Amino acid sequence: MSNSPLHLRLARQILGDDYVEMGNPSPKNSPFIDYQPYKQMRRSKVLPDDQSIDLKTSSLGPLSSSQIKHSVTEPDVYCDFFEEVKIQPQQQPNGLYITQMCCQPNPVMSLQKYQQQANLSDTQIIQTILDQNPEQLQQLAINPQGNFSFQKLYQSLTVQTRIKCIQLLDFIELAFSQHGTRSVQKIILLAVEPETQAEIQHKLQNKVVDLILNPHGNHCVQKVLDTFPPAQFQFVVEECAKDLIKVSCHQHGCCVLQRCLDKANDDQFVYIVELVKKAAQGLVVDQFGNYVFQYLLDSTRMTPEQTDLLIETILGKEVEFTRMKSSSHVVEKCLSKGGPVVIQKIVKNLVRNEDVLVELCCDRYANYVIQKVLTVCDDDIFEVVAEMIENNMDIVQTSLFSKHIVQIVRGEV
Image (cartoon, rainbow, N blue to C red; front, side, top):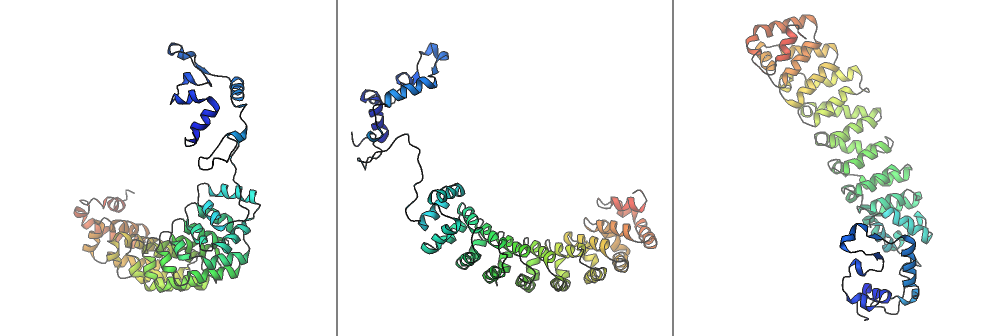
């Protein structure tokens, strides 16, 4: 009897040995269901609530809460079977226990319930972890569930406690993690004090480029640019400048550099523009680097003189650039954003040779540039270009890519 499972022992005490020995009883034998034969199945129904409560009370009435055992290994321990289960906080807060609880499903709700029962504040919870198990703070911040608890706790800490947490955490490991990056971004977002920003800068120093090239880490760098003043993220500008081509020609790096141009002060902006000008011909042909060049052309912070100087860095290679997918977009943008003098130089370089012009009209990428040329050039140049195309209309008309050019030349558009 003592070695039988808990549910069988409870059933014997409540319903009797004869009922339990039947194995898996059918509804016919259940005292809680009004059973009807199969033919009357449609009229079978569960007992009303008042009758069910009376039956349960009469069945369990003689049993006191101390008569139902709840453990086989501890036969002398008794519990109330219908009592609500509650979290019983320990006498002294335990850092390891708190960390494990925060890494379970629904961590924020569990933590709030624990804090209410143990009467502990967010600062006391973190301080317990720091005093007893400081190495668990890293695991809490990087855990898929625990990072939510970490973010909730961190926002209530004092400046001194935040700095202590920052010093203990491995920012690079967290930033490279899918879940840890959220914790790092929360830390950066709340870093409004100069001393906290200085600690974060120390953690990220000499690792900015590695973070930028990481699918998770780049968000941490962007959060620094969004949160810190320009003087505090100067280290980001300097490290990007050292590997400008590497950063600009990367899927995530080009986005970070554009954000950097947005948030930089005037001196930092001019510094980056000068570096882009030096690397312009390598950037415009790259699938990601060309976006950095175009971003500067669209920037309202660029003066007309700065824009023309930037465009002049690609003069002389317009024909080559128009035949490539990425750089053809750049040449089109130059024709839209440049001044009259620069535009005239680009047009002359493109239409200088009649045979080359016909090839560009029939090219899958360059034809868009020629359409732009016909749109932005003055009347004199338009007549020259139109005459060159008309002289080779038999070739131009046979191309699948020159349909719109023919319509512009003939005035059909």
